Amino acid sequence: MSFWQGKKVLVTGAHGFVGNNLIKLLQTTQQDVDFEILAPTRVEVDLTNEKQVAEYFWKHKPNIVLHLAGKVGGIGANKAKPADFFYQNIMMGTLVMHYAYVNGAEKVVSLAAGCGYPKALPVPYSEEDFWKDLPDENSIGYSMAKKNLIIQSWTYREQYGFNSVILLPANLYGPHDNFDLETSHVVPALVRKFVEAVERGDDEVEVWGTGVASREFLYSVDTAQAILDMAEKVNESGPFNLGTGVETTIKELIETISDLTGFKGNIVWDTSRPDGQLRRFYDMTKFHKAVGYIPDTSLREGLQQTIEWFKNER
Image 1 (cartoon, one colour):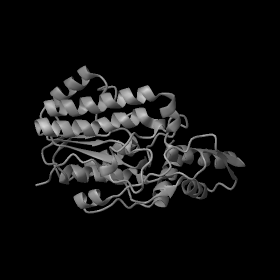
Image 2: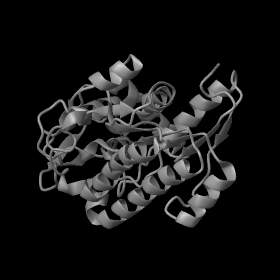
Image 3: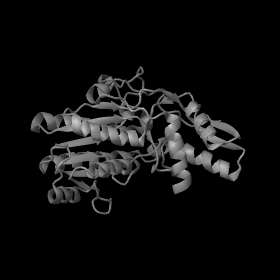
Image 4: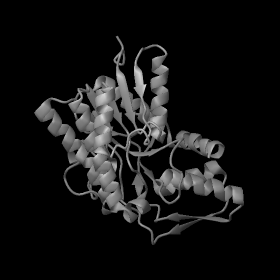
């Protein structure tokens, strides 16, 4: 029998860019398996409002909760409003897991954040290193709120025997992302800058930092599939790194986006802007052991899909 048979599956953040892909995968599964998908909007339930969350869980009583919702943004947005990022994320994570437990859910799978790793740490990052020091100060409000998910998962498992799984995704990107230059992450911001520069015929594009920092970039479709696989196969809190195990410098990322968009001008580096954490990529051993694979959509392929989506759907 399918893991999903007869279940009510709640997806928070279902209308975000990872959630959008996750819903599509669940709907494909529904063609062969009978189960219900719950995908409330922010208007239907404000996940930072305890009364609304309590009422929603009491009314619908989901069996499986896939918690993707969160307030996210790049370095600039995090530095401008660290309290907003802390409060909204800690409230959402805390309330969703608590009321899932209270209303008898079988399992919660939640996305935490890889930026919660210590600022100065040898790469690749292993899950055992997660608590060795504080994260980078540029996103500390968001990072510490997401770290709370892991503590909650551990303590609810210890005291109540509640089954939850925590994933630490790498830098996410893909179709349906937030392309607002004021609040977006690095990939969508760069995609928009270069696409629009080509359309205007600009001679140059300004980018932040020095380009020496490195990250690990994970395609949103791969992320969605991994969440479903973890829900089906894993019954321990973790956390589990979720990435590709491939390190890419920001300079390499920018050059790839420039090439894929056909930009022929100059790239101007604003070195007064922060690079953020110098290096970040994952040891994927624990995830591979749990589910038997490592996400493998290449950065170039994922970026091509993302650029085409942005051109056609904005």
